[in-house]
Length: 302
Image 1 (cartoon, rainbow, N blue to C red):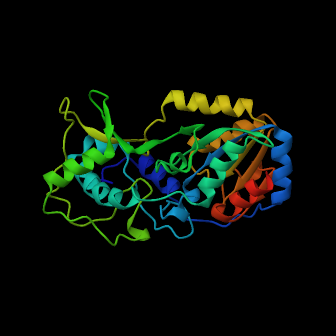
Image 2 (tube, rainbow, N blue to C red):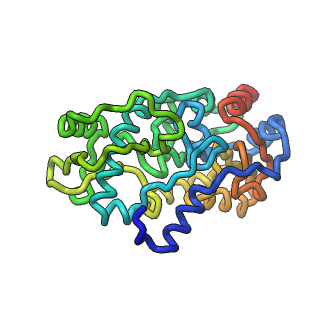
């Protein structure tokens, strides 16, 4: 972030990437969660970065995460050097994260959708951009923050596959080798990587109109598209329970759905390792690894 960023913006980023804290509101069991799901009839699931850490995708707020300052939307638009740095890092980070595979937590939710009992899984609302729910087989899915596999032009609005832009950047930057040993600490959830040699990196423009290209994901400080929010609220209105898996609910984009469910007196089940902002709203609050607990929960649902 540039030193001239407004104080309010810097404060927002600090809150969004605050350090991990243990939960003090753990209560209930998997059996109780199963009974709530049975009684609900229809369930909506909300997932966050914690469900993907088992696939090697890092998060901003987990117990093993490294404190990081993410790219802000206004900075991306206004600062050419910041954009160049971002794309140089994304070029290398995406090369690894594009190979991530769904873990048992993702597969459990896909299995639940296919089973359709004892309650209907209306769908999964995910805050993740990694595409792992689709890869696992979920079809009833709202990608709240977009997909890192797509790139959008901010002038003409055309969307192109991220893999095509990767090839173009490779051709424009033949002297830059892709990192082969990027570790957890250097990666960010949006495929950003910590790199040093970026000042000569060449970023391509839109091949159709010459406009500014951006990953088709919601940056910090950017508004989630209204249709996705409306569709998510519609699922919340139709569900008797919400299961939150792997989200600290730090940002309002996910917390608002939990609040809506609690306002309707619907059941809220939270599975996350560490504190969440929705802990006080949870009917059942389980602390643990979603890679382990979700398969157990879905296994009980058979």
